[in-house]
View 1: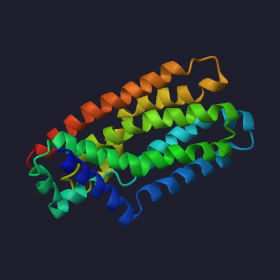
View 2 (view 1 turned 45 degrees about the horizontal axis):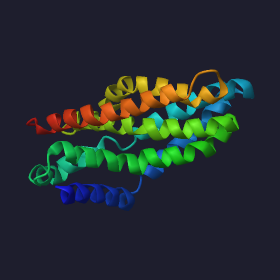
View 3 (view 1 turned 45 degrees about the vertical axis):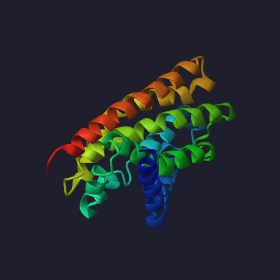
Amino acid sequence: MSRAFLAILKRDLALAVRAGGGGELALVFFLTVVVLIPFALGPDLNLLSRIGPAILWLGALLATLIGLDRLFQADEEDGSLDLIHGAGLPLEFAVFAKALAHWLTTGLPLTLAAPLLGLLVALPAEGVLPLAASLALGTPALSFIGAAAAALTASLRRGGLILPILVAPLCVPVLIFGVSASGAASGPMSLQSPLLILAALSLMAAAVGCVAAAAALRQPD
């Protein structure tokens, strides 16, 4: 079973690297959002510093949505999903492997790039570590929530149009506590509580998202 899990994980990682346009496009989109919003706000550095964590988290959410609709749709089109069904691996674990591959190629690069992009939103030096920690703990929840929504729209021809509508409302708690954790260093709020809540949200999204996605994929077209 572990060999099948690793095979699916390696396959999705190889496809993401070979095809391109996944993690790279997400990073470019993330950079675009972080660059354009300060231009719209104007030269007020105090305002930009206050809302900087919110800009970075919103950019991370929007960037995560790029390519998410192809997470299961491509497998549905080329017949790979039928092979995954018959691989002897519980479908929940197959979904976990694919969502983990999505996070490794999208969420992790965004987490690593965020401290550098924080300079563009006047993020204070003491806020860099909380920002990185909040993204590292919170972005897995975005991938697993997105995986459940991608499974629901896998058989739809234009499911990518519906996907953001399904994902965005479910990600609001992650955004709230992610921004709270990122801004904790510059305010009186404790950093530990929002980070623990983010970790709990990611674990819950992994459990519920994999079960929900597997149930959706088992439904006949």
